[in-house]
Length: 194
Length: 101
Image (cartoon, rainbow over all chains, first blue to last red; front, side, top):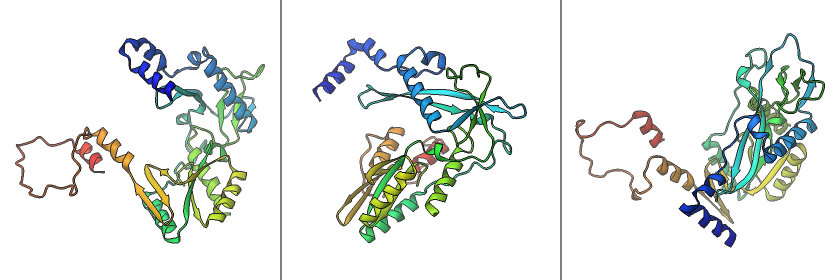
């Protein structure tokens, strides 16, 4: 607690403006910028391992008759309330806006909740004397399955040795894909119905 | 369910069973009793539930520079006089609609 207060005082001291500028680091916008930093390199490594471990994509030769969606690393520093760095969060995403409708994706709509639904759930629980519990699904979109054949470029900096020209065939719905929210909803809906 | 946030309600023992089952199928984080969901604040006590949107209200007040406004029991002018159109310039209509929801 004392440490926290000291920290805040330091931040608020106008003489410490240089320190402040260092404290609030900008998020890198390119891979070239991020790869210079240990923290981002570690974060990217971890993400890549996770993608491979979960069988989300498969390294395959570049298809001749299919288009390949661009991919990109994005970076965002998550801050604590006092401005200190919480974690280095990066995500490897598909640039879904280059996907072709009808070939690489079909429908993209997905249902969401309305406030009236939540309110009726709360009133149901209240009248029955039940408690309402809350859960969060981690990396929800990666649970969705896709029917279409979708290829994305290999992550920059993580191209497989001797297979630099290869691409990734997606086995699961992926961040940035047009159909990701819908695929996730379909999966969850099927599970809950069963 | 809202994308990746899920609400469950049932008899106490059943909830735990339900959570366990979900956790075997998906990578889940148990947030315990519902307390904050899509901007809705919830307090659950024995035989009572309170709802609030305090954070949401503060955000709207900040957005429209109204943090210093006075709270009123009736959010309406009681002795309304008609303003002449020349007395004040009309507000940006889209901003007005954002403000009143």
